[in-house]
Length: 367
Image (tube, rainbow, N blue to C red; front, side):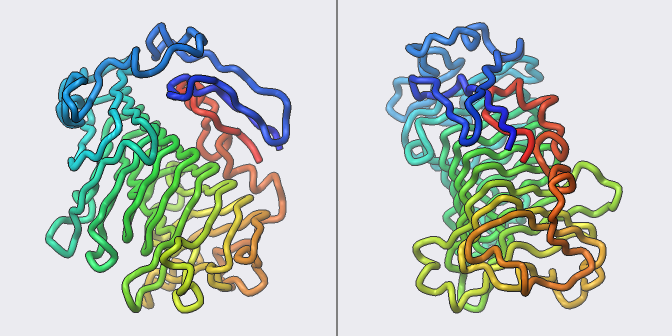
């Protein structure tokens, strides 16, 4: 496995130490000119707290007490990185990063410390697209060390925690919790690294071009009578090269509340929201709650999608990774050729080497 790791200078951890699992070579990528000058200084004593452009703190020790106030104060149309540091606390806000808020970064004190929470949901009258606790429409947005929640519950229908529509968005070391439609990866290029994502029905959904790398994906206990579906990818056009999900080196497991019921609740890797739905799981660990068939149709009236979609699995492991009883759809494939699997890596699928280096986030381009 060829690994390219870059040091994420935005970390609050005071020591910049990254280790490759299979290589002793670590590439130190100097941040691009998009970043403030202090980011080129590798002095480990410097922390984000002392260099953020704005600080949010509920105790009044920052520039603002709410995240929305800080976002409103951030520049519009920025060509350089603007950083908002949100101190630990529970922020009951619906946060919207508008299209004009470009190159914005929001960093917290940890995915168990800085919590953004909401409960908008479809059953109570909010459309799925508008139900997100955090919505990102600005390009080149970055989030790190946040816990984003939608606490509406499994009986409330679609209730999004995070919606991402901006281009070149990076979500790093964040926890994203909800039930149905947890993460709405709506559109454009997106990269998720070292995240923890939970949900029940279609909980990673949308038509974005997204790669999930080194994430923990956890299925929760749904409402009675429901099955769990991890992905609902919405690629609509066969020739659309900007749509599809690649899930690489992730852990697919059952949550503590689902574990006692996983023999009674079916959990699938995905179902096709769009006619050309594209999802590949590769080099992942899959727990035994994954149904032997692996995948499920969208509904009984959309069976034509089963021949136009592309669902692939490559070198996964664990009790749920056995492909011997998988669906026999025309669009499903057990990938055995590493060259074919390579088409779904950060380097080829996301063209990540052309833009991820500038973010400073660790990633590997290939298998």
